Image (cartoon, rainbow, N blue to C red):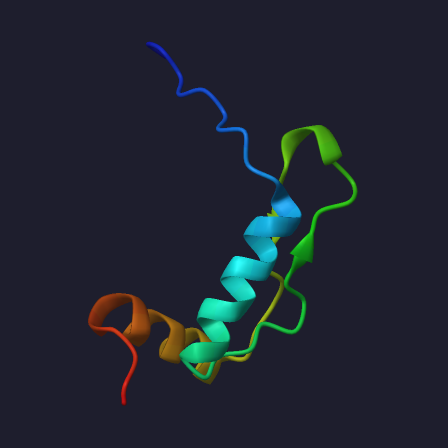
Length: 68
């Protein structure tokens, strides 16, 4: 693989709260949204599992923006 991208220096806790806030504004709740404590050096965010209807709403918001 030619030149993998470098990992940005982003606090995963800040990322989780920013994502939670944005999803909340769109009326979407990911109950399992959290920092992945199993691999702290990677700074991973655990999105968790959601119902199919929530996944479809999330896809719609990503494609078209929140419905007002």
